Image (cartoon, rainbow, N blue to C red; front, top):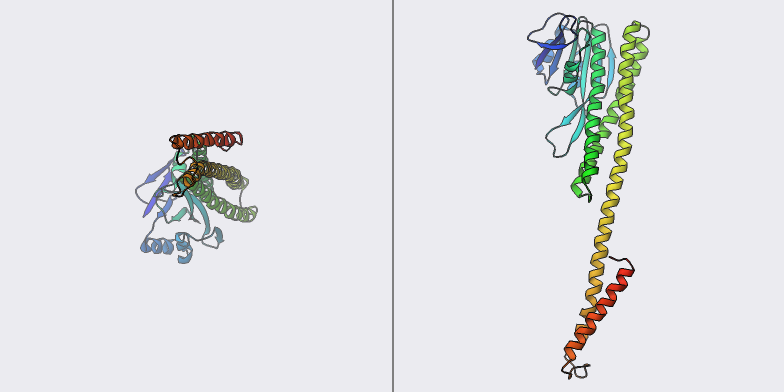
Length: 312
């Protein structure tokens, strides 16, 4: 699918348009082979490069040649079909060609689209380098949205759970895995941005360098936030694990207490229940009452002792 976006006049608002026009943003979502081939031939883009962002295992990188500059960076996505709240990252390719910015992504409606549409100061899509920087900044801000959602869910689990269950711990592990994906992607993105910054230092105007620096700063801030949230989440997981261990130990102690208490009447009943001559109180009309009373007294004494030992 190919969609076209343009910034109308001086409004600074990104809008979707029905057909391609000079200076627009050409966005390919879940593109077919025919669409990829058509765009590659029109703008002299190598077919291997334009297909690269569709590989979910593609690493972030930058390629430059006489016809275009290609960024491949990771952007976050919410995995909506999972039972737990999960986030992952997918590659998105950004191509700077004369007069256009072209993007290629394997998923329709990535979050950065909504972020760009919410802005009121988007650079003109015809200003290729400035608008490409806007996309990079929007991608970093999409990470912040995912991080805040992850942290909000962590807080919700921590506040709502007095006795954590296995499903709560599993959801925390899912959030932790999401942070691992995000942290790895932000780290590789940072490497790409720094490499491009060194190249741009001699080719960009001061205004363009400032935009690129903004994208780098946003990415670094998202990376630092990810590290903080990851440490907090690890602490929460450890806390939940300790609470579950404590509950398990308490349950095992209660079971051991009940078993120990029940041993008393079992032993006494076993002794006096033997079918042998000479059993004490066998001929007494009060034998059953005496044995039962002695058993009850022994149970009370044992419970008092265990209570003082704080077994329950």
